[in-house]
Amino acid sequence: MYKNFIKRILDFSIALICLLILAPVFIAITIFLFVVNGGKPFFVQIRPGKNEKEFKIIKFKTMNDKKDSEENLLADEFRLTPIGAFVRKTSLDEIPQLLNVLKGDMSLIGPRPLLPEYINIYNDFQKQRHDVMPGITGWAQVNGRNAISWKQKLEYDVWYVKNLSFVLDLKVILKTFKKVIKSEGINAAESATTEKFNGNN
Image (tube, rainbow, N blue to C red; front, side, top):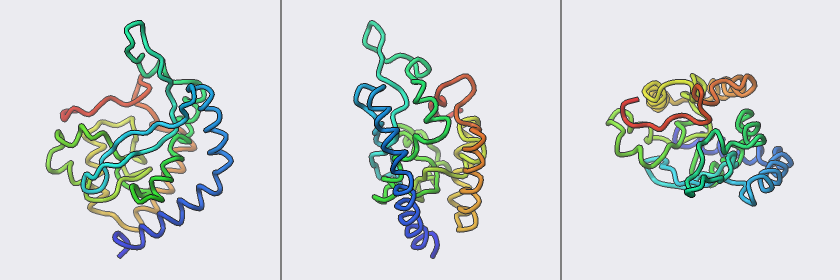
């Protein structure tokens, strides 16, 4: 009952309350990023959700679009703006995803929605991560986030799917607050973002 009914009610209610409370922060960050990112405060990208159904995820844009002389985007670490680094470090870049939760694309807690290109390289075990709605935070995030290997991350995702419960979700929320406060596991070692999944890492 919790998985199929109560969880969605809690998601919608909590997301709405959080958006109302965080409205001043949301507006302030939007204005700052609008200025530093040339009028583009948001990052929107297609991601696969429950049952691999695609949706548009929305986050605050933490990197600019600077390119080299050949019109190729610079490496992530060169495009990450100072305010973007702060927003990412404090996990404030995730706030717009509360809109995804209200729309029913995401849950507050679940496996993180990854890139569509990964669908074809997941094995049967890993594909089980799409049996539930993706989340803003999840079991993998509170057990290492971007600092752990893809193999570990996907195993944590499937473990969550198989053990989903109110008590587990509550545990994830509490551990998420602890991780955010300590800014643990935000990026993979020596990288602005984590490396892409290739099926072997």
